[in-house]
Length: 200
Figure 1 (cartoon, rainbow, N blue to C red):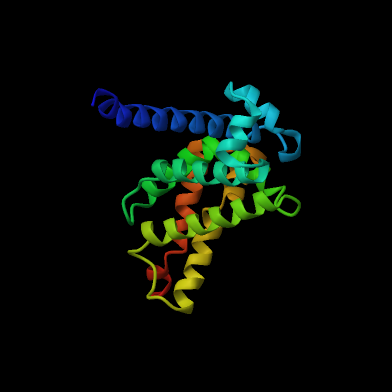
Figure 2: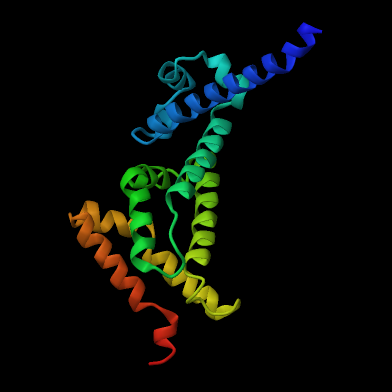
């Protein structure tokens, strides 16, 4: 009886330990790929960084491409937690977006530069674009037209105005302060508000 009672606890503890290991591997891989090209990072590099064996990574994820897919999903989930903003509050929306870009923007740009030659990154980028568009639909729901061509046009404008490359242009290429870059994005988003243009 005692052994049966302890079995669910042991199984639960094992599952928790596996989840801890999985998260450690994801964090290690994400950290490496945020700084280095995809081809320059091996499973051995990830294993060394995470303090596990390569076989452990294979058991959890499979190969390198599968790990990259899992990393993309994990990073996207972390971004979703960061990007909490009330609908229609442009300043809060931009602040939430910059909180994400300031931490992951350089890595995003590095990954996007490899889209054409690394299938796993192409899949991750497509997934990220879809998530970003869904986020835009949610936080700008108060200003977007009803579903149709006008809504798609407005979403395209908002997507361009909040793209990571625009953050890179302002923060990295032009050297704007975060405050000035956020103000520029707020001004741009205000200028493309469909409600204002429809009354001009």
